[in-house]
Image (cartoon, rainbow, N blue to C red):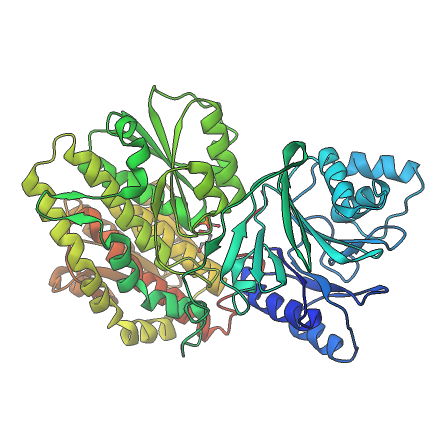
Length: 608
Ligand code: M6R
């Protein structure tokens, strides 16, 4: 997904920009570029491909000055090539823009600009922005950005420089994250704090419609109606090391292994064992309404949606609430009608997923109350929700979401338990569930000890081209998530199915060439899953089972067994998903895939 880094100050802008762009690589990109102002003119270098290629090209040129902008692009308008890469100059090479987001009325603006003699070089919507700013320029870049922003519809985070103003960097945001970094007369602009962390931890998160002007002497933020505004200066607590590999070959593996800690951090300081209730500070502002709510809608995309679906089963186990899980990308276009006092709970690792944000806004417009379960602090979704619970799981860099899924399930359990205790759950129930939650970090560690076995299974099976993942009830979402993990990192075709649906179609696929991963836990639908495994075996389909420790019955039936410790049935997805993540990881490794940056995928999906 696109990333911005911009800089003004005494350091070498070329160095700052390249280093920043490298730290944005994990988000996924197809091209990259920089524009550096040397005091007289602006030099642009941009190309499709890797940052390393851009760096090589830049090492051959001398660029001075104190101002520059850089970008990693993930194509939305126009194919990934050198011309469509950012930065984009205007027709007269005066204004240079890098842009995240989508300008929805760009075609209309483009037509208008063409009538006025502007000729376009790229297929991007961004080139419209630089030309619009240039056309509105009368000697002050900030003024020109304000006027252009009024004419643009859609989402943008932009960093802009002008050839005639070598000491000014302008940032503007609407619906796309943008952050100002500050350090001793140096100022940074970025869409992702990881890009500037080697330089500063003091940051300001711009809000929608903010326009920031950065000069060597300071910064000024104005908002709608050109009013100067003050925004909170915040200190980033997580370290660069947190975002680095620490000896692991891939971020995905590192993050899988961080799960015991992430599970622990999700409940750290949030458990009152004596009262049998969780303590969730982030929902205090809405608690009076929340404790009386009758209906909850859990919302997310991708893995966060599967967490929402698992959350539905958790809520059903612990509360009397009417609970649904919805795909944000579908929900945003539905005709919504809410029971009075409905809460929409948005789940998101990045806090920037465009569909989730849009669905929340629609729900709010129609009267729902919002909550967020978000990992990235102060992200757009966290701010839109206004109240909620942070994962505190540290940065997740691998494109495949792993530790956030298990962390989300822990937080959903805490929320459901809190509400359940205000309904019918007894003190004994509350204490029992919290005590079980507290065992999960060490049980997750036990599961991770099966890594060698899982690697061996992956070695045996990674050449199979089609896989089926089966689960029921609590572990139906686990099956969906297991299939998603395998397909996104290994590019193997995999389908997740509710095992009860087998006879309604997918059983036709079963043959010796199609492995089935069956998730079977000792719970009330255990025997039903046994039947489903029989159905696969009697059609000579190989079965890899994730089952509870000591389950001899399953062991006798299947080809491969991965045993996990027993827990409460509605908590079992937290442990059962870990072997599936490892299986996907090792299959991808055996197939030589780009595990942390799978093709066509981005870490943070900030466009629809
Ligand atoms: O940042 P979010 O949790 O909102 O992201 C949602 C999805 O884009 C994300 O989970 C995606 O499906 C991952 N690639 C899954 O591994």
